[in-house]
Image (tube, rainbow over all chains, first blue to last red; front, side, top):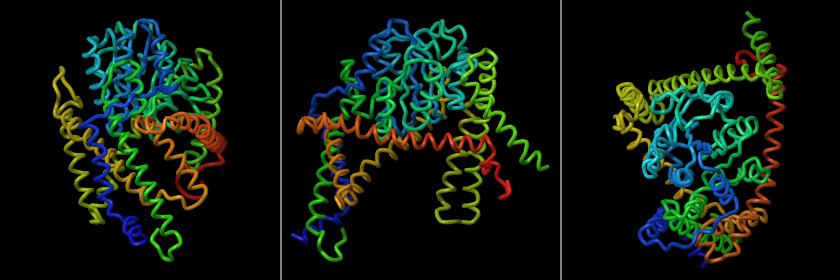
Length: 278
Length: 217
């Protein structure tokens, strides 16, 4: 038993890689489609968007780059579909320069799918340097901070921005963040000063760190990782890549749990062995 | 010279630090105009920081190539990739799309940067699994608690886990909303207090390391 445990505890990591590859690929080929449970924090975002009257200003900040695309793109797509379905006026931007083109393509793709017109139903402002100071500038005068949108169209006089002078005129803001230039920054420099309601969407890795903001009411909802995106897709009754990916994520979690339990069994078998590599 | 190098930056820091702290609590139009102008300055400075960052990256890798330090070939590759991207970016006018059509710069972004970054992030799953197998052991009572919590959260956050053990959903929600929040809040308060103390030290000229130069500064 001990010899077996010793061999297993120093197993070639390529076998672990193969297990993970199999657990990821098989559910994508043959999905098992288990129901997605909706958490109160995701439901809160959905409910707020649902309650907004037609023509309200919905601001979506794409604060991520392509490395977080698998988790945050489904969130963005689900939120945009919901906002466009509710006929909200949608403003988008990003604080992450490498994510600008990605955000633009997501925006354009969902808008085309929902038959929305740029400049009339939505505007993508693009990226501008400054982070927190850019938010302050937008809070004072949106048109000075972004005189033109990403497609170089002047923002002043755009039908989608009618009646919008600054961030005070935003009804709801969601920051989809993969790091520090995101939810916390929007709260500190934006919501706290210009008094709009906001929520966050994040990668699974940073989601636990945002729960204090959720509990204190600094953000009214939180969409965490691929699971959060799948929950939102379930709520809007339009399944996308998040629901499809949850089977793979489920299988991966199970494999990791199995591996962790297994390595602990071997660890306890070898624990009292002198000089064991445990 | 010492006035320009030391006293003037300290005076600017003190005045701007106090003024901006007060500005937050004064909703007068003059105060609002001032912050609008200042935020423009800060945006311009941020823009220059980007140039500085690129220049620094070029410098660091130029030194590596010149000295033929370990892995200098990668620095050469980085140089090549940066120069090609900059050249194509300039040629495309910095646009990824023109009249709806993708430019060469857009092609580089969509077909190299997006898949490369996504791949880098995706391989984490493999390394996390391998690292968990080798390192996630109940060596102590504290590690055992962490292990149990991690297994419950990993079960509770995915549909298959919720299906196999429905109770993990509620326990996960409790762990995230109560225990995790409490600990994170304590850390956040500590970090924020530290940030306030450091800001005060900088504003009052006690902390001067940002000025650089010799020890007496």
